[in-house]
Amino acid sequence: MELSKTLLLGFIAGVTILIGMPIGRLRRPMPGLRLFLNATAIGVLLFLVWDVFSAAWAPVDDALAAVHEHTGGYAPVLGYGALFAGGLAVGLLALVGYDRHMSRQTARYSKLGPGAMSIHERPQRGALSIAAWSPARRLALLIAVGIGLHNFAEGLAIGQSAARNEIGLATMLVIGFALHNATEGFGIVAPLAADQDIDGERRIPGWGFLLAMAAIGGGPTFIGTWIGHGFTSEAVSVVFLTLAAGSIIYVVTQLLGIAARAKRPDLLAYGLLLGLLAGFATDAIITAAGV
Image (cartoon, rainbow, N blue to C red; front, side, top):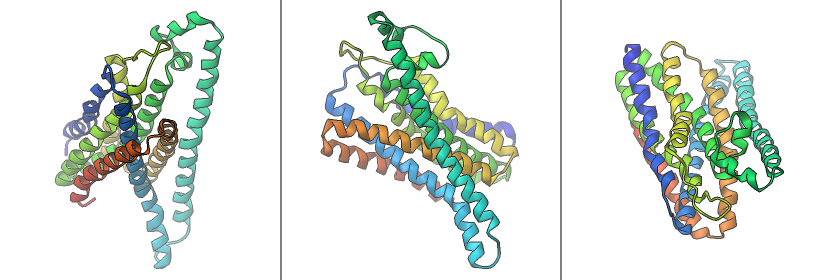
């Protein structure tokens, strides 16, 4: 398949992340609705953790099977295993360090006095501007980064199948990943439903912010498709998948903390169920392609 047509497929697969973005601009979501949205986002992300780990571990599993059948050695096992462990460690611990750095920057702002609160409304540059964001917006950014890493690996799969002229497979992948991204967009904006200023008023994100989060989360699908069309590497896929897994796990722990403080296990269970079922339902489309 031509590169231009392949890139169009990657764009279609990634752009559907925009579908969930308007939820972030709900003006007065009820407390119960906010908790339910948070729980549903956890369900979607938990599915992604399973999905990512399944794909990232497959090369290690295949290498171990080859050792068992005496058709391969331990070098691929150790190599893929090291990439798996290294990517997971970097994805998880890098966000821990990043979050601590942002906390220190936020504490620096708090020493500036009451007038510093207006910093939320003023454009800034660099890391300090992100530190001035509300916790909900920083969490949305972390979710977008984790999903973006995952979507880059998905884009590689689309590009590689198109490069091999497997048109039917590429088309089914695009349909499945497009549905995936629609639910993932919702996961990015779910924390924003509880975003409030110091007066308890709802802080509604602008369209610019939502589009930026969509670009971070969905844009890598397009980039991965472009790279995958001319470059195939199972090792690269393992690295990006495990980076995504580590970052998503960290985000899930943050969202679970929010859910635990609310003390509404019923809403948590309902939201988790809906998010998980949505993830597996969209994955069924990809499975139908024989992947």
